[in-house]
Image (cartoon, rainbow, N blue to C red; front, top):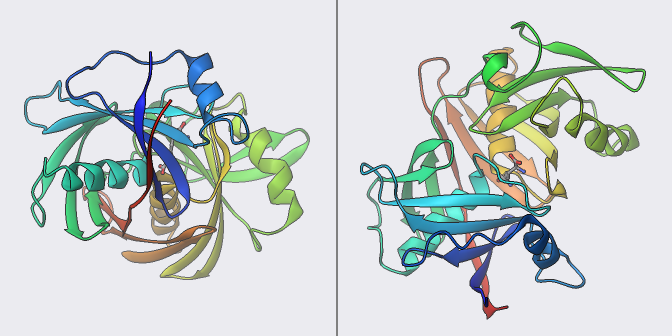
Length: 275
Ligand SMILES: N[C@@H](CCC[C@H](N)C(=O)O)C(=O)O
């Protein structure tokens, strides 16, 4: 069955967006998604995003998320900005007005603030390890054995699981080795997105993310939220943090426990296609 799609990206984290508002339920198999995501023999993307009718009547639309290997995810920060920009281009949601969208992990609130700029209320970061999920009793940080290497991580759910590792230099080759190994560490039974954070100051972080199901990406929106939330919880960051990823910058605002976390950044259209 042919699939019409829009290729988009959020600071280099790239997506195929499919419109299933009239036609929900035609999820391609994991094997087909993996074939389509291939960068030489397919379209090439980090995630496939569907736009569908909302199941929750308080939300305008539902969006589904699948990684490049075909596995589903509960949340995608760069993806939800692209979904909002796509709905804005269709005239399906109003501008400058908060709109509730339903993700697989629950509602978020998007606001298209200008051409291609979107702010999202991502909800409150969840540090309870049982809900990340992380198979350890609750602590501020966790020390994990990664093939004989001791690695200290913060853990948080942003609707999907994140491990956050502070390093002196995100370009250190040790980071390249640790990313893929930590993503499949058995302490995280559902796998984990792993963010390596270099702290430049209380309001400025550098970040690289090895994503569960997609590998190293140019940017990870929920990864930026997780990095800022863990830094804030450890007293290493304030309420407003600029997070620089290989593909660009996101602004994260979080006032701490009991408060929602906000992410602001761009969303861009690349091309339309059918496969
Ligand atoms: N690129 C994303 C996260 C996509 C899902 C992730 N790989 C997972 O499996 O949870 C983002 O921008 O947040």
